[in-house]
Length: 148
Image (cartoon, rainbow, N blue to C red; front, top):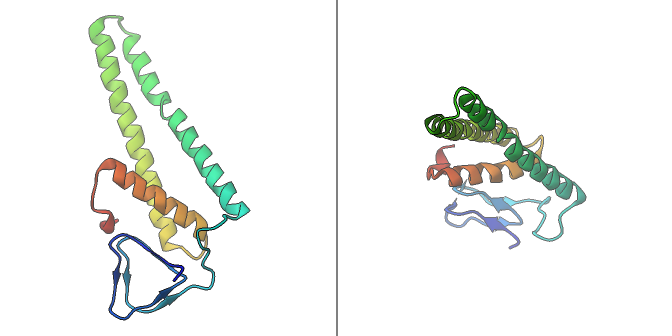
């Protein structure tokens, strides 16, 4: 009743989940009841502010992630304006862009795991970054979310 149970969550027989959230791949061995449960109704003002700041930071990350590949391209093409150097510049900029996003994804994943370990301190941020972690793992095509 008024609960959310995640994908592939495992509940022991006879377990009651009331006003609680069970995460993806979660294992529940005892009854759950959360007095602070907030149903999917209206978000609080703090939730809206945190979501807006997170969206703004993500947009900023996308914009900033174009700077190293551009610099790589201009550095490569500055030696010679031939077609082979331009192709090398494009290949190097793609490789640099991949590395930038790999570093960003690993940083987001590390921050999400760190906040999951310290859930009692910042609960909303931890939940939000856990969602980002799941999206990053899903976008990279890795199916082993349970091992994170």
